[in-house]
Length: 196
Image (cartoon, rainbow, N blue to C red):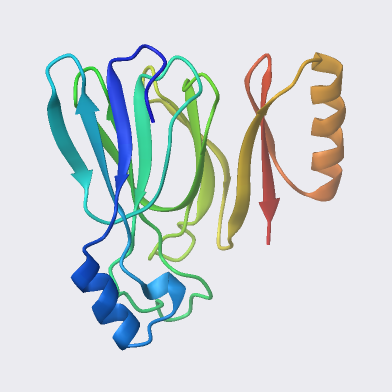
């Protein structure tokens, strides 16, 4: 995937065929199969960089593309934690394409990136009791706002543009009645959470 400014290519790296064949012979489930990696090519100097060997997913903002955000795939040997009904999250990495610097957020289970890349919403599935929650991180300064904390699972994070402030206020009221949380990221963005 080319960035709109034409300076970078972000690409998924297929897992080694030998690893995939070995997993098929062992009759592993699709979620247990080897995961793809992630790399970038800096077109200004033709440098190829592997960001991670095993990535669960990655996302880019629409425009401007200054960051790539990716969730590291969990190791195959990680068991469920005692007393928890869900898996512990893995590392979420925010890579600044220009500087090459990474910021890592631990124990993330799900995430969403705003269209302009100014904010990242993510849910944490922690090893520690009560460490679960949903958060919004601004990419410009790294500040984080807590949306909700406590034992539970936050699913289906989504950031979407809204064209009217009135619609945002109405949805905020409706979500509060339903017991969910809403955090305005900017005038035109909203974050919607579904809680289990």
